[in-house]
Structures are given as structure tokens and as C-alpha cells.
Image 1 (cartoon, rainbow over the protein chains, first blue to last red):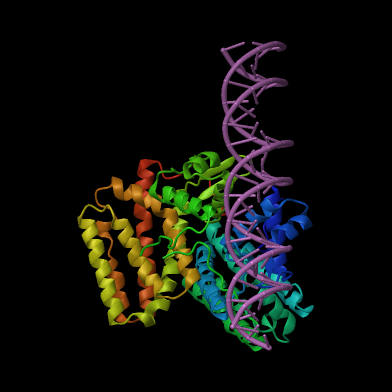
Image 2: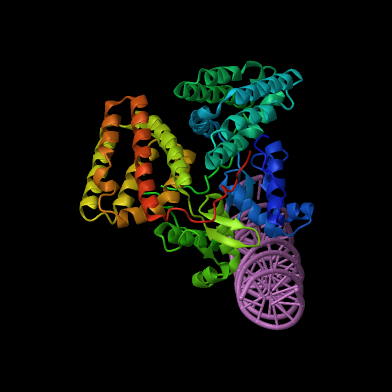
Amino acid sequence: MSFASKGMAATAQDEAYRAILQDIRSGRYQPGERLIPETIARELAMSRMPVREAFQRLANEGLVLIRPNRGCFVSGLTIEEIYELFEIRSVLEGLAVRLAMPRFDAAALAELDDHLARMRRAGAAGGADWLGRHQEFHAYICGLSRRPKLIAQIAALHIAVEPYMRVWLHHVAQPAHATERQDEVVEAIRTGDAEHAEAVMREHVLRTAPRLAEFLRSRGQATGAPATLPASAQI
Amino acid sequence: MSFASKGMAATAQDEAYRAILQDIRSGRYQPGERLIPETIARELAMSRMPVREAFQRLANEGLVLIRPNRGCFVSGLTIEEIYELFEIRSVLEGLAVRLAMPRFDAAALAELDDHLARMRRAGAAGGADWLGRHQEFHAYICGLSRRPKLIAQIAALHIAVEPYMRVWLHHVAQPAHATERQDEVVEAIRTGDAEHAEAVMREHVLRTAPRLAEFLRSRGQATGAPATLPASAQI
DNA sequence: CTTTGTAATAGTGGATACACTCATACAGAA
DNA sequence: TTCTGTATGAGTGTATCCACTATTACAAAG
């Protein structure tokens, strides 16, 4: 399983949330695009109200920006913000792998190898679902940390950059799946040294950022104009 | 400034959010307690709708748990969950201080000393607002990282444990403000060694967890019964 | 042609209304 | 007495409605 939410939607609001999330992740709704509750409500055969509440949730996760009285916009990330998300994810996934270390027995290591194989296969097959496999790989490691909140936060970070990763992987000849070295992570885990695994994971996560940034800069397009306020922003 | 949100509430929903948040942080609403929209709405002189939307936001931040068709409950944290939050915060604040390092000039260091002094003063005066001062100290350091999302996440983590910290500080003879060594953090920052400062900050944050946990265990009370689902939970 | 004021319209936030779910209390059966 | 089924009421989720805001288009004045 990757970073997709499980279970069935119990409520209309939940249904709306999943639908919109899906459309943002897939890129159907572009950064900067305005989301009109009425339209979406009609599409999903419900009223505007549950859609509004779905907007709230998405806004809290930073995927959408609600400007009071102005509407709801898919939040575009600046390159700096993308960097920031990678920085945060690097330490969180570092923590996750460190905490997961005691649970890497032979079976888990075998599972890891399976994930590597699946990723390689997906990469060779054109890379269409490489991104999903890659997320599954990370999700599996994080899952072994047995820290629900940590896992949720990491998932949210994966999702936030997903649209950008998607265009990157789609438009570029030698994207991540050719050059990323997940096996380094597995190798580090195999040593059994938690500190080392943490350091390698950090490095691994961070490595993607500059390359993605460079691509987005080259397209000039990275930055969805309206800056995204981090919802529960404080200080 | 500590981890309080700034600005005026633009919308009723925002007003509700702030009011409820405040009451959870202060402990007026106890973990496990059920929040009834109608009641709160009456208190705030508005309808139940903006209150519901505030619930959504709070649920995403993990402060409240919405059970479909069952109502909204202040989420109690188990001791394990509290540990988890400290773990997460330790790596995030470690990252923050590392990124902030280049901005610690003489003026910033002086400011830091001011914060230390304020904390000591608050501690000596009985500790009533020590917690606030302590949060301000951390907020100042994190602020210098210039990473809005990172700052927001750290703030959310501070807030989540705040109710527990509050009872601890209130009920215990020698709480954090007597024994915590914030000066170690400042010392580490003064060395100019980013890696070192990160390590010390991590250690510093983690140190509180076992003592808080012990207190809560002794009261038997830590765990608000209904487990808190991490909102955007995935995998 | 540009600028500024105004009207029309689309869209937002909030209040109310309604149907359905769940919990509790109670009555009747075992 | 205990168990089970039912009724009742509180509370939730969604739809609809209304008032207000913002934006746009357009017209009049410079």
C-alpha cells in the first residue's frame, strides 16, 4: 500500500475530500486553479456544504489555500517551499527508519528487496507507476516505525509534492527512477546501524530536491502564483 | 511571541477555531470530553456551521477526534502518543536550529539570553507563565530558520502536548522549569557548529518526554480514552 | 483613449430546516 | 431478575436559503 487512504467514505464530506485530493494529486486540478464548490458539488451529486468542509481539511494539509471571501485555490508551491518540504521529510523519514530498525528481520528485508524489484520493473516499463511504487517503498519503511502520527505527516509531505513529481517524471528523460539509489537505503538498513540508516535516509530524501527544483526552474513553471499559507501557521 | 496565532479573526469560523483551540490548550475542555456544536455556537453567538468547520480544522491537527455520527471529542493522548510527539518534535526542532544557525549573529544571541532570563524569572515567580516563556524561546529559535511550514508543524506539536504540560507544571514540585537546561541549547548555538546544535536540541527536546510520562503515569490519568486518529492518516 | 464610478453577477459565509443515526430509557418476555 | 426489543429524544450530516462581498463589465466624465 502506498500513501492512499484506506477504507470507505463514511460520509459525503469524506467522499468529497477523497475525490478532490485525488484530482489534486493526479494533476487534474492545477496549482493556482480556483475550485468552485458548486461545480464540484454537482459533479459529486451532493450539496456545496460537504465540499466546503473538504476544502477545510485540504487547506489544513496545505494542499489548498482558502482566501476569505475570495475562494479556494489549489496551492502552488514555490521552489523554496518544495525544498522546505524535502528538508522536513528528510528528518522525519530519517527518524522513521531509525525507529523501524529493530523490526527489520529477515522477512522485512526480503520484503524490502521485493519493493526494490517492483520499483525497478516499473522504472523499466516506462515509469508510469514508478512514483506509486516509490511511495510504497517509503511507506513500507515508515510503517515499520509503528508511529501513526509520524507516518501520517510523512504521507502528507509525499502528497504535497506529488503533482510536481508527476510532471517531472512525465516530461523528463532521465528522472529519478533512473538515477535514484534506493538500494543505498536498503544497504544501510542491512548493516543494522540505526544512526547510519538514519543518515543515509536523510541524504536519500534530500537528493531529489535539487533535481526536481532544477527541472521546475527550467520550465519556469514551478511556482503557482498565490503563496500558500500553512493553515495552522503560528508564531 | 509564542505559538499563538496572530491577526484578527476574519470569519466566524476562524473565531470559533481560536476560541475552541484556546479552551483546549488551557484545559477548559478536558481530553475525552465531548464538544457539542450547538452549545459552543450559542456561547459564541453564531450558528453551528462555523463551529463544525472549526472542528474539522482541529481534527486535522489531531486536537479533536470526529467520530462520524457520534460527535466530536477532545482527543486524549496516550503516553505512547505523547512520546511520539516529542520524538517528532525533536527532529523538527533539530532541523530548525540547524537551518537557523547562519542567522545567529550577536543581536540574535543577545535576544536568546533575554529569553533565558525571562524564563528564569517566570520560573522563580512560581512558574505560572513559564510554559509560555518556554514556548517563546523555542519559537524564537525556530523562527530564525525562516521555514514557514516547519515552524507551523512545530507549533502544532507544542500545542498538542500543552494541556498535559500544563497539568504537570501545575501539580508538581520540581517541574521542567527547575531542571531543564535551556542554556545548553544556547551554549551549543554559540559554538557555531550546526551539527552540534542540532544534536543538542534533539536531546533537549527528548529529555522532557520521560519525565512528563512518568508524571502522567503516576496520576494514571494520561490517556484520554478514545484514541486519536491522526486525521489524514494514510498507508 | 484613459480613468473613474456604477451596475450586474458570480460566489462566499453563515443560518436555518430537515432527515437520519445513535443512545438511552423503559416495557415486556423469559 | 435479566435480557431483549422498542420508543423517544438528542445530536449529527446535508440541503437549501439568504445576505453580503468581490469582481467584472460597462458607461460617463475627463
